Image (tube, rainbow, N blue to C red; front, side, top):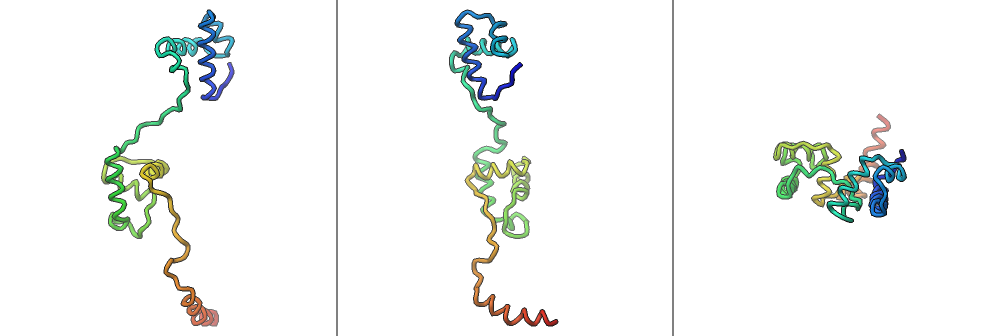
Length: 155
């Protein structure tokens, strides 16, 4: 039996329906297309019930989000209060920290990768902390280096 990509099956379903309309038997259709008779039978049944719409390929949907839109809005309001407000050291939100807040508020746990998707859905973007402080004064840093670093080397 041949192997096909999921998106190829739309073409196979359409060809299956065409051959049936031309008077072919299910067994012959299955043999010609390299598919099982059961697959052909299910395809033709859907075609009889729903017409051409049953032949179209649809990307499989995943499971529904375990949080409602209202809960996601509540989560964002809580996250806007800051990580320290929720008992975490520092101001940075990480996916495990967000997951912990979700567990506390709604009793639902997510895989960290799914927390990232949830935040993206809520239009929160991933941001990387700056390697140097914004308020850093280059002159004062250089002055500190001149005053303190030579002394440390001689110690």
